[in-house]
Length: 296
Length: 236
Image (cartoon, rainbow over all chains, first blue to last red):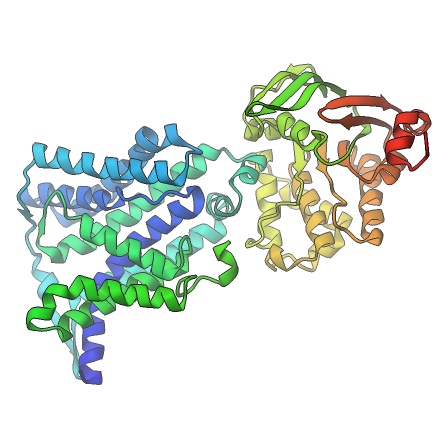
């Protein structure tokens, strides 16, 4: 692979990396605050996909599809907290993990029975196939949009976490939840805010993901959430910067390996990606961005 | 504040048994005793962080024992917890900002912070730095300042001098006296440093294996044989 091809594949990986980064960010935030690895996070992506499918199928304008999708995933995330996780506050990490699996299967089953097990087409928008030549490289409009949106979202998130009282409370809760309550800040509000934020991020990821994926099925969220989880581990569990870096690294690696692999080895694509992950974690068990002492 | 018949458990283990405590307006009351005597559990029960307990806890005649910690704090009780537990990755300013949250939407947060930075000048120089970069004594000052931000009427201090150099221990005790005299804060102080605690407090309780063993003014306690034997190095 030449340098030119390498860079081109990285550009192609921007969309995928952005989706992983946004999902990983939501996962990492919930993990850092409440020790929850929310595997049902992928179903938020799926729910976003179904909202897009329903509305686009009925020729609703994108101007409405975007806010409706974000609202739906945010509310779904808040509902998850309310119904499934609030009764388990303070439960062990294993209990929370198993609950999140149950929730994921529940939502998948409801969608299979209620809608269909078959993939439903989400029409490509005209603009998502457009591309531009920048020097020797081709950059798709979808890559430009996803990257720009992701950067804007990350900046907004950083501002929120640094400037607002709720944002600072979320960061503090990741360090010491009990003492946040001693500051007079209701525990419930911080947790709901974190869930809502993770839902919003999943909604943005859904908009970016499904506008190029072409279809949505009840299990659409599974592969991206496994990837996002890998990104979180890769970046250093619970580390927000790490989650974003991990998301992009994984997006690029996915794309590059898909381009390099040909013929029979293509079947082992996922295995190769995971082998590389294991190798990286052997070298840096604290993750790419995590510091050693944060392991404790 | 008045605590009556407080009993607290960790599973089957009774950590605090039938404790009565009273802290009057403007007093400094010390809660003394060795490790494991139940002092911290008593404080945690008062602020609502330790739920497995019975008995009543009243603030100004109102029962607060059933309230969650965030509401106890909003009623005007501040706690600087054992081990300081500042938010290490947040800046000093952010720690103080969170401290002010209990006061709700008030306009005088800025003035309050100014006043506290006068009391704790070392924090002013470090406002933008992560709290983790402070020394132990500075972190303790931050923990106390953070608890004072909402202007509590009752301040609970859990082992504020633990692990500090003698010079800093004196600084903390001076601060405690100034808080009462200049800020009108009522203080319940948990300490193992019996000598110095008795010098600055108005009254003290002595706890042993979960129960109050003795109480009184510093003079009374200094004369008490049990206290002399256990804490003041006087043979009984």
